[in-house]
Image 1 (spheres, rainbow, N blue to C red):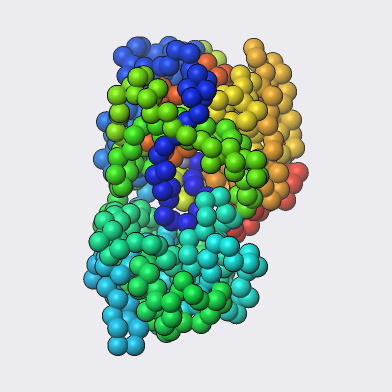
Image 2: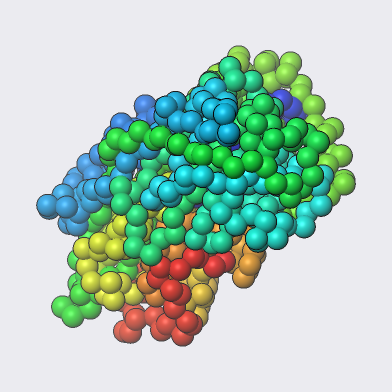
Length: 568
Ligand SMILES: [Zn+2]
């Protein structure tokens, strides 16, 4: 699942903590760090899923980031399995791979910002992060001060920020997205550039590798896409130059200087590929229609900051998430929650008795979306080995670049190997391996979130409910993240949306966010395999029902604008 952007500086490593009692709440028998693969069978089983996920989310895959060798390795694993299982390739030139033209765009220290006689230097006074899509042209912009935590939350007036460089102190964790002044992007009438003032020395800024690592994005922007916006990180001294005053004493909305921006980004090709396969249907006529099933093959790679203490981080994040529940975007933790959070203390001694310190830099993405990817493989295996196929064909897509902005699903839906209107539904799995009581408030054996299942087709939503009733242990669906306007914005945060935008009814299956989301601690040892196998069985059985239906699921809701912004 893609991160909801509120600030591009992610996650101060407040690695500490744990009420000793939480240690007791850990798994009675934790799963091993490594697992020896065993042959898989037709059934969608916890055993097979373990074998697959310990391979797919192994450290050797290096976090499967789009544009890296780990991405090539993990997509090769999927394609090898599909070859072995005998699926029909539906990628480029008779292969399972659909290459997506992407580039890595990295900040160059040749960049400068000129304010009057003063020149601010890239890598010393500021760093810039490139947007996805096309680079906006910038030139000279006016600076305006956006505020600091504790200021009035009232947004600045549109004409105070439009087309400007909006400079502000970072929003506190858990604050609403967009900070104080609203989102950027010239297309939206917002600021041209968002800049964050970090309490950081030039030396530390030099080490902030994130923008230098580069951003992987489509080589050419998708039709109808809004131009992205550049974000800057400024030292306090650079901020003072741009504002012409001490930002620590500035008033919200205070006008600054005019700045001439000369931002340079280096670009290189970044390997990115969807894995696409078909299982033909059994009915002479209906086989020309498809039930699409998807997951995303990529994750967010390795840390570019210092390694973290895995076990402390896991215990702390889990405790934090449990207390916070889901402090929803735009909401503050309650006073009681804040008290509990600040009372979190580490008992390192207990931790160290259990494990020596294990430093970790690899964000394995076992749940995100290793879980969906290997469950999709299990579903493919079940169908490939079944003597009787559904009447309709099945289109399997393991999407690339989901974490870069749903780019692989955008590409495949703009370049489908089958006619768009031949796809009767899309079933997406992203993060389907957790959802226990330890992972999410209200979690448990029958926990599963459904998102989007009735947004285009009431009938499709009803089908999922009916099929669920026939399962060995039916799920109790949690629909709260499907609510219109829900601040977590989950409906817009995974690949199904790129199908829905074309009017294809979708169902998004997920066991939800948890403390290890996008951390080095999202590892196979924390996955609930029996739970995940039952999610896979449900998705399989929904595909059978939709695949054999004597009509396509009726679309009875308005279709979105295919090039518009997703609306939760
Ligand atoms: Zn993700």
